[in-house]
Each structure stands twice: as C-alpha cells, then as structure tokens.
Image (cartoon, rainbow, N blue to C red; front, side):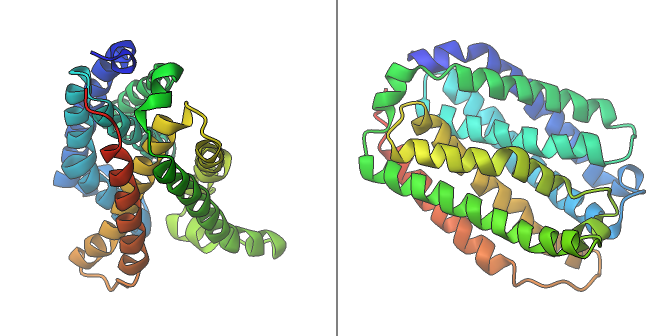
Length: 273
C-alpha cells in the first residue's frame, strides 16, 4: 500500500460516515421535501431538491466507493475521493447555514464535520515525494492548470457581473432576491475560498509543484461535480410543473465534458500500483 493512502486511512474511514449520513438525509428530504424545505423560496427549494438528488445518486456513492478503493491503495480513487469530499464540504456549509433549522439539522452538521475533517486530513496526508511522481505527464498537468485558472476566473466574472452592479446601485442581486436569503452562499464560498483555491492550484500545477498534482486534480473533480446539480435543477423545476429554461444545459455540458476529459487524461497518467 502506498504512502498517501496509508496516511489518509483515518480520514477515508471518517468519510464513509459522511457518505452514509448524506445519503440518508438526502433520501429523507427527497421523500418529503415539503417537510424539510417548507420555509424556502421556490427557487431555493428546487435547488435543494436537485442537490439532494445528486447527493443520493452520485456524490454519496462515489464518496463511499472511492474511499473503499483508496483504502486498498488506489491513488486514482484517492484523487476522486478528495474532490468528492471537497464538494460535500461546500454543499453542507450551505445546508447548515442557509436552510432553516429542522429535523435534519444535526444530520447536516454531522456530514459537514465529518467531511471537513476528512478534507483537511486528506490534504495533509499527501506525501510530497510521492506526489511528485504520481502525474508524470507534464502536458496533462499544464492543461489542467490552465483549465483550473480559466474556469475559476470565469465563475468569478459571472458572479461579479451580478454583484458589482447591485453594489453600485445599492440594490439586491437577483439571485439573493430569488433565494430570499441575506446573501448568496455560493458567491460567498466561491469568492472567499474555492475560486482563489482554483487559481492558486492552477498556478502551482503550471509551476510543477508536487503538492498541486493530486490536490489540483481533485479540484477538477470538485468543479465537475459542481456542474451536475446545476444541470439537474431545470429538470427538477419542470417536474414541479413550473416553466424553466434548459439553455443552461449547453454551457454546463460543455464544461462537464471538458473537465471530465482533462481529469481522465490526468488519471490515466497515474502509474498503477
């Protein structure tokens, strides 16, 4: 068994608990969302339903399966696991701070705590010497680095295109109004943490920093997973009998295919153990 996954064993085991609780909580919310999301705006409730569907069908199973495979020594599974853990932290910050208190509150807090410690532990478990040889393809790392920077900056520009005019006119951004929240939690998390992290990791990959090879690749997984609930939301809205626009599927589809292609290229370059 290799060094990184050995050092991360505790965090891999912790994430199994996060995956189980996330699956059960999302399943409960899907079965009767009117009980858990009764006080949300229709826009926010539909986004929450889409997120629950993705959690139950995609993220929790990926998190659990990759944790088990990584425990057996797979570096590829470790990279995907780390990205899925980051995605779980991101979403459960929103669950715990933005959805009104209810019967699933402690479940959401437990998922956040378990996944947050798993993320921190997983990142510090990356062994620099081993990380340096994990991704031997310089071209794949360079393309990945550029993709991380470009996608992060594009999202920053997109959010700023809404927030800056609102600041200049002393008005409420449309997304905040639609969510009926004090601020847009996605914008807060992206501005403060995730978009700067994407740019930094991209630059580090371009400069061939060993640490950024697995962690930056995991960030590609995070970005790929982020596109999934955005693409699912229009279908959730349509299932509620409301009109919706499906044009978002085109840019999200292009983004997802591009990220998946780069990620697959990177993972294929990882030597088998």
